[in-house]
Image 1 (cartoon, helix red, strand yellow):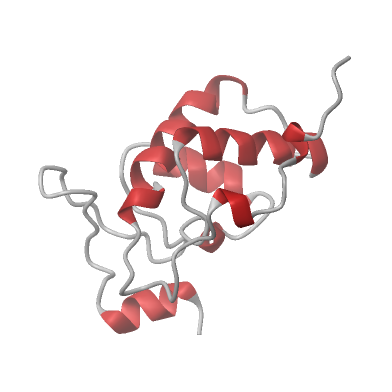
Image 2 (cartoon, rainbow, N blue to C red):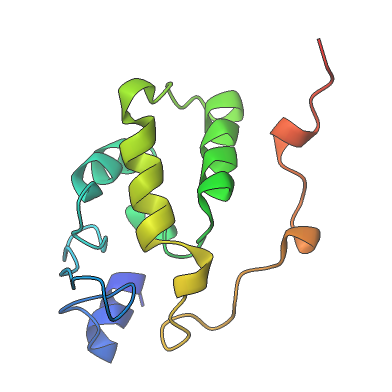
Length: 127
């Protein structure tokens, strides 16, 4: 079952909220992304190479998202995000931050940083 189908089956497809003070946004039925400000840029950038359904599986802080995108640029052929860096990082760190994990949807919390393999950016030798 895909994440989108699971979300729909569990009845979480109508709206998602980061906190009680935040406005609620619907979930895009195609991408599965929260339709908050910046979602279209993320949808276009990320879906060019992989499904957007991978995004909620890998939540993180702004620094984690920056490192992940830097890794994609350094090793996976992703283009430089240029003027879209801030909107992409703002959206991802706001709506897919590790503090907002809904354990009703995911089977376990993400691995701690100590359990993750090192990011390529941490293995670089100084020039």
